[in-house]
Length: 215
Ligand SMILES: *Cc1c(COP(=O)(O)O)cnc(C)c1O
Image (tube, rainbow, N blue to C red; front, top):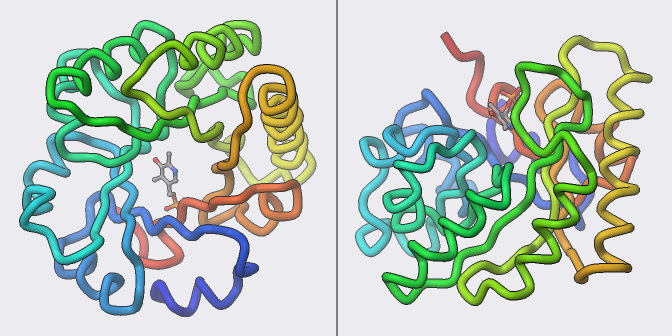
């Protein structure tokens, strides 16, 4: 385990985002020492507690938010993160744009797609709503839409995983060709990242396989 070991199992063109949620800042620094620069976190409060302010972090260290974002945390999130991968509504996208406008920042965003249709998962359920948000992003000056993110279905059913990843990839291609060019397709976690890469992922978000299990 460790960042470098996992990096070796992933093709060069695929970005590896180590997910450091629940892990210590020492673990973050260890992965940083091995070359990791961006870290995935799912709670704004945890980012605030764990990481120094952006201007005080080691050179090049970035935090990407990958967990559901509450409206009342947007202001903090845009200050602490350089990317938000879990945008799940047009309202949230507009609020992110507005808060960025106030501090003169442009932020990178991904739209999260609920590709499994599972009730307890966040993300856009409707492809139409997601496309509407992608379209709207073109008029929002402070957000830069990079791509899509999805979390695969629960369980270890390989065919189900692939099906969800395939749906997301098709949507990615459709948005890319008919609305705005996208470059990031974030899918795949510790248990399914090889399948996700096989289905066209350009970024995998890996926690357990790098940092060990979570309580
Ligand atoms: C926790 C988390 C991950 C990493 O999960 P592992 O199974 O530990 O690799 C990836 N994506 C999201 C959105 C997460 O919340």
